[in-house]
Length: 565
Image (cartoon, rainbow, N blue to C red; front, side):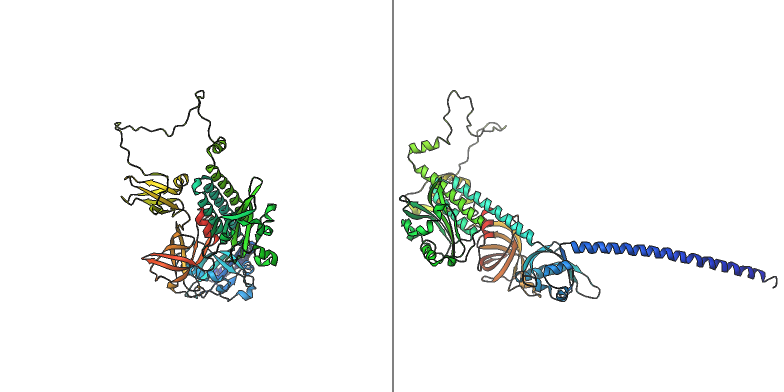
């Protein structure tokens, strides 16, 4: 080995030593990295297990759809909701599991979601494989897939059937209470001259919310030997048996009234289920063609004075306990109203005996208490110059000798009546509180001095001004590929028991006599969903007027909503 080779000999062991050291540390780093990866894997497994447990425990079902609306993924909870095996659900169109009446609503919302114009959840009726329909709240989001030009959709579905049923039940109870207090208030404060009309108006309310086609009051007289229908409301197209039941013998209907004498309510959902003898006994007492009936006794104290009843002609009704209690309470209120009316007609001495219990005692000089003399006049800080009072409308009870001089004012919204002077065309909005205090037969004196006689009509159809969004749908509405003119968004501006008025968003070809379905949500506590078949009756630019048609044009929900809100 030469002298020049010695550095090389020393360098080689140094590099080898460095390599050995490097190889010794590398496995340690790999081991540390492996431990970190293992720890991360275990953490992810734990998170996955936790998420899986949460997903299994959640009440929300997840359904993923491809661009064609076919199911390409479904969670176990969604499998339970749809009542079918996962293998059956995959690659099936979601439309198979949407209630027929809500097919179009789903596809409308689907298009709005893809257009990014709908971010809130929506409610529709879904159905299981066996056809069972249930209420669902759906939160949907589009899902972009790189391999697909059109997006799919992820649905988070929640079964709200129990919630919806409980909410509707609470809403119904609220409606019943409000309606009952409304009837009690009417029968308690209206003038005695209008009691009979208010009773019929109350019977109409009961009929509309109970599904009855006839509601009546029958009173006994001549020592309970005879009976007469004294007040009655009948729906359009239903025949009344009242003419044959004036001064009729109670003995003729003794078998019917025997249960009434026991202070019990009689409720029959299907008259055809009665024995032939009982069925025959009811003929002549109820409306012709009656399918269901209900009646309950009217008592004044412990004295039986008559009955109040309901007849269903168009379709059978299984009268609920709430309806039976409502009819019973309304009957008691009617009895008190009739007694009040009778007391007003009694001789002066009799009225004095009754009124001494409610009228204040006369003021005496020894009494130091202050007597209320009306509101205090507030004097302004002006120059004290007396201000000339403007002439005011004056109203009092009165009827003309000639009935042709009476004009009619409609209580359009249930709260006010608009009165116009034929002499100066000055108009006055008369509040129902004034009408109830004076009566429906009014003598009105205008500011110009013109006198007129007015009859306020209470039981005419009135419209309620609303602000409700909805949709209208042409045809069956069960097509997946709906055209743009198959449906449209609407803004409902007025609502009655038999129709709606709305405006259409955008340009839509709507003509008189067109038929389609409308779906909208009421602004009541339960957010009740209403779906109706309608026919267009009027078109004035954007304003569309429609009439409800179909088997149940005026249902209980709309009837309650109109009368109690």
